[in-house]
Length: 443
Ligand code: PLP
Image (cartoon, rainbow, N blue to C red; front, side, top):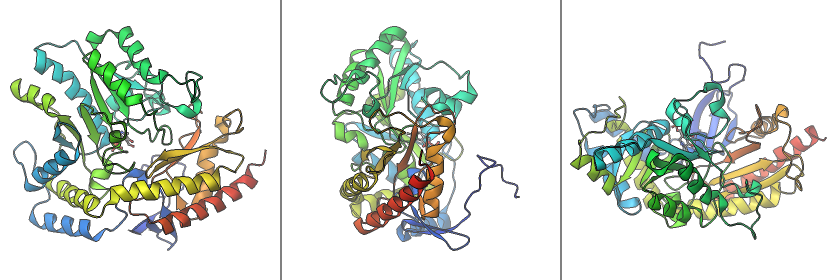
């Protein structure tokens, strides 16, 4: 018994001792493949010498100065780097300390934008999607569309939600041939219902993560979303807290749809787990509206944009670019996806293996043909992930179980430094774990 108030009080936690590359070691000396980079965070793997060097150097200079008074060389350098890498005119970076703070900042920025631009605003609603995750603070949870909301209702506002872009279980009963991208058109229905004058923004994960296990929307999805947002004068917020900074095989995942959002929320991969950091990359037009308006955006969090985290992020982003890790994420990710499909899809309880780059998901089903999910009470995804731990693999915990709303899925999101040989090692360990689990759940 220790004094930690754990997230799941009745669970046995592994105690981490150290990390090296794609591996984590517990205090008993066991080695695990960190196949989810913690929570799709440790994109450069563990104990990366270049990042440690940057941290040490910055800590020796100054670790903390508050944004209310100080700017710093690391935040200027990071913002310049990000501006160069982000699409279109998204060239202003508002720094916070994590993903939930970033989505909260985006929703406030969207509301205030219209006030700054027009001098008045009734536009306050943010439309989001079911099967989405935007963070655990109450505002972010209000946008979130999965079971994490349930115990905290009523939420701040009843944020309207539209259908997910979930091709494996199309909410409109369509298939590849009959698809008219109805899930994107659903946004227009929601805007008309709310009244465009009441809606400030639409927020979506470009590739869905924690609530759905790597759902990749249809190739036309975001083009349609962009057109609808433009037509109704609504901002499009792209939540790339998980997908950003190379995870899906492009620097920003939205690039694959050739669409430019109005804001991109970032966190995790930007500092790759070495120090907490998040941000909103805003397009110039939004920044200018604030500059020409009140000049003030009140969303300060104490640790936001501290020099230590920013220096870490500078080292991380430079390493991503110079070591061509985004390209590697695409190539090794495509190889890993193919190998996973070959090895895991033959199991009778694996319905779908999907994703993009190094953001991959596995969905478990009771019946492959009908796609019938397992009974929620079985907690299948969680049990499988425990079997995988015995085989030396850590995956992002199953999103299923509890109330069954999400089905049984889990995420694979290895460090972008993973080699093809290490991908083979991962697939072999997963296949062994899946085979053992198959015996346990013979129905
Ligand atoms: N948005 C997305 C898409 C996420 O995946 C997450 C976390 O998983 C968040 C927001 C919240 O980020 P954080 O846990 O850093 O608050």
